[in-house]
Length: 387
Image (cartoon, rainbow, N blue to C red; front, side, top):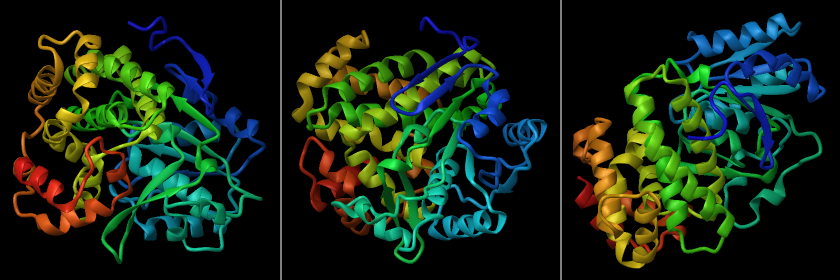
């Protein structure tokens, strides 16, 4: 168990300023003023706008003497139109700070809205390719306060947003170093009401980030260490969070693990995400659930190239069997315990265009981080196994 419990308030930065602990949302108005702002735009998704976390956020801001505006037109897979409409709402309201609250979709959209409010180029000009981010006007960027209500993407600690290009039916990673939120509030009380299936799927998303970052061939020893510790926390606390949603300690530890997974993924991602992105864009499926279903099939494909790493991981997690077999057994057992579907067909994606998804996956930026070089044929092999 961590030395810090869910009720222990603490602050740290890496480099984002993190305000961790149960009840930290109460200081939100003070955090807004700390950034020199006074007119917050609260960005969330349509499914969360009428629930407790958003109500409490708005209430805290109002009690703090502020007059927040709400923008909630964000889809589960946020689109370029969602971002454009959010920018328009922000300009109309004269907002000077974005308060992002929700899961990865809301946080990604909010970061993109804050970033795009001061840009003259279209959002797609900032796709994470080469030095595209150098095109940005950074003279008057709007700060973001991020409040995660799920423990999955870790988007609150990230420098990018995944936005669906409506016309091209693909997910695009929009990146700029200064898209990272200025302040993150990790308050586990805001995640207590998350249903068990969403807790499971988002938790497996966090696991996928840490696992792919750990497996990536690039050299980043700090990110690799963070990935290992995130995997340890997830092994211990994800089942507890799913089985007892009111377990505040489990909720807090999963928030930490989710953030760590996002920090670690700068080392690289791989085939799990390279395939989940086109599947999500084409079928509007839940990203975390896709990652959970694809995970063991990708791991089996990659196992010969990362045998030493998987042996280390199996020992670090104290698994019953060593090496790749032990890690895959752990993931399969965990998925069953969390009631995650075993195949793509099991989650309703039995009829997919394998060739099209594989072609899109080959072009996805995450494909380059896979420990085994990916081509269309390799991705088709993984997809057939996952079906």
